Image (cartoon, rainbow, N blue to C red; front, side, top):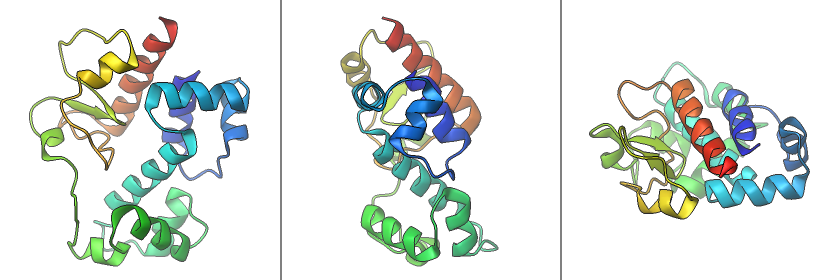
Length: 175
């Protein structure tokens, strides 16, 4: 169920999601989704979505051909102002400052090195046994990533990262 919700958030980040609409897509109540999602992912669904959207926005800001308005629409913000406000609140700099290279607290360099897949706030390295609980998963994390860093492993696309993370979460749910 959390895996289904994650997949929706990653496949359609620009949608006007609410906990109710996400719970409906996952086939559970709002309370169940909120509790299970927070327990497995480490933060509530809407906080996770905000982080996901801002990470996408940060990636898109690297393309000088995209306007802030186009980026805002693509990642689910109603206006460039709304995106700018959220971006500055979470990242500490405006989107324009970020675009110009001012990136305080850049994504954890450990995430880009080696073969660790950064998945939300959990990591799963190749050849590692699957953790039996979220606590064990967090204990095995090789780094803590405030920027989320989906798909930072060189040979893993965002879609593949979502697939791996969804399977990981579903494995924890079935235990």
